[in-house]
Image (cartoon, rainbow, N blue to C red):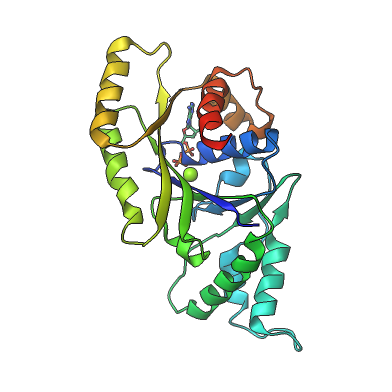
Length: 253
Ligand SMILES: Nc1ncnc2c1ncn2[C@@H]1O[C@H](COP(=O)(O)OP(=O)(O)O)[C@@H](O)[C@H]1O
Ligand SMILES: [Mg+2]
C-alpha cells in the first residue's frame, strides 16, 4: 500500500507535537491504521506525550554503520535490520525517533541506506506522520517527497498567522509536493471573544492558508503533560478534543 504522509510545520512551541499526538489518537480511534509516527525533532518529545520510552534513534544507527558490520550482511541489510529493531511497536502504530541530526563528517551513504529501507518499510503503513521541528530536511532523508497533509500550527496572533504563511513556503526549496495545507490556530482563550475571532479570521484570510480549525487552550492537556500521562488516554469529552475531532473529520474521513 502507498501510505498517506502527514507532516507538521510551525514555529517552536506552537503545538506541532501536541497536534501530532492528537492526530495519532484520532486515526487510532477511526481505525485508520497502521500508522508510522516519526519523531523528527532533535529534541525528541513526541514519545513523552504518548508515554513511551525512546530506545535507539536513527541518528545512532547511522553511526553504527560507520563501524564493522556482521559478516554475511550487506550494509543496507544491516541498516534495515537496525531500523526494524529501533522502531517502537504499539497497538495500531509504530514510533521511529530520528534523534540528533548529522554531526560533522559525512553520513551520506547512511542516509542513502535509510532512504532505501524506508521505501520498503513505508509499504506497511496506511499513514506516516512526521513531527518536524522548524525545518523539514528529514522528509527527504526519509525518502518522503509528497506530503498529503501539511499541518501548519500557529499561535492566535496576527503576526503568528502571517509567519505561518512564510513557514508553509519552506517546502518549496525542498521540492516537496504538498497536496493539502491545513492551518491550525492553537491555544485560543475560552470563551473566544467575537473581536478576537474576527481578528483571527482576518489574519487567516490574509495568510491565504486554508483554515482547518481554531483550537482552544486546554487545561486538560496541560494537566496530562505535567502528570506524564499519555495523550492517547485523554477523554474525548475534553472540549479541545471535540474541536480537533471536528476538524480532523473533514480532513481524514
Ligand atoms: N491547545 C493547547 N492547550 C494547552 N496547552 C497546549 C496546547 N497546545 C500546546 N500546548 C502546550 O504548549 C507547549 C508547546 O506545545 P508543543 O506541541 O510541544 O509545540 P511544538 O511541538 O510546536 O514545539 C506544550 O507544553 C504543550 O503542552
Ligand atoms: Mg515539538
